[in-house]
Image (cartoon, rainbow, N blue to C red; front, side, top):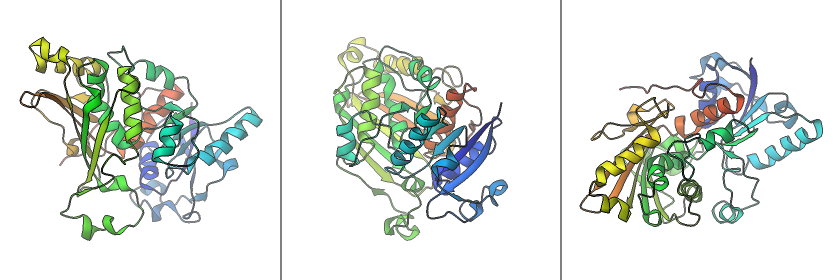
Amino acid sequence: MTWTVAVAGATGYAGGEVLRLLSAHPGVELGALTAASSAGTTLGEHHPHLLPLARRPVERTDVERLAQHDVVVLALPHGASGELTAALEARAASTGRGPLLIDCGADHRLTSAEAWRAFYGGEHAEPWTYGLPELLHAGETTARAQRAALGSTRRVAVPGCNVTAVTLAAQPGAAAGLIDQSRLTAVLAVGYSGAGKTLKPHLAASAALGCAQPYAVGGTHRHIPEIIQNLEVAGGQAGAPRLSLTPVLVPMSRGILATVTAPVTGRVLDSGHPDALLRSAWQQAYGAPGQTEPLVHLLPEGTWPVTGAVTGSGLATVQVAYDHAAGVAVMVCAIDNLGKGTASGAVQSLNLALGLPETTGVITQGVAP
């Protein structure tokens, strides 16, 4: 069977990466490619690397046009998809049929209206099924509940890219009760494509090259409540996680390297073998490469994640170690922010919702050097 897929927001970085994957996906046929201000142009003017799609016209984003497809992927700015998805759902309710909706924006991720208003402002949209198949639920050693939810949904909210990196780094410790979630610190090195295509002075090459720039410092980054939400699910402790998050733009186009630290719990200290106990929890969650989680690889001991190894792919690499001097767990994850952080996560969730093998169309090898 072949499903038709429309992509709204096709001219942005996320939309382009979704198209790169779906153009090689054996189970889908690309339909309407839409945008707002760039409607009337051709896709090649925005994504010249997508040569087979270069002559395709960019259409205006229209509810009736999108609704003609089996699947609609929304790669729109935060706050822009809520109104559009409401119109698509209203149409589906009146006709009795609607497309599978995959939203790469933030509008449907948060379950807390209070958190939405505090970090985004405006009206809180209905939360959808969360599109991180590897998300652990309290009591699980491997992710089953989230995959089951994605396998029966028609509405998917794809996680934020920083959220994916921090969640994958830290959730095994939260689920196993091995880290103090009230004292989490995360520092992220982030590639510039994570800031989008909007032209701003601090994103120009003259400001970016040879320079590292922190942003959204002091608890202001919009991904904080989403990370906390995930760790609450994994640890089964509502209100327990507290997170200090500092992202830093570094001169690379793609990638996120997330380093998360947290004090360990008494259980780890009392074990007498903190390194082995931490390693065991991450091993249970992610297994050997390709065995438990096809896209999350726990690296061999002593080997640390690097962004170059996952560039262009849907992979995440993780590692954990115990800092004996500081008494903290050091948890690291590397992803491509446009890959596992956005488009690959969207395609992975799309596959589960359609009953396809999870990694269909997802690139499972990085680019090196």
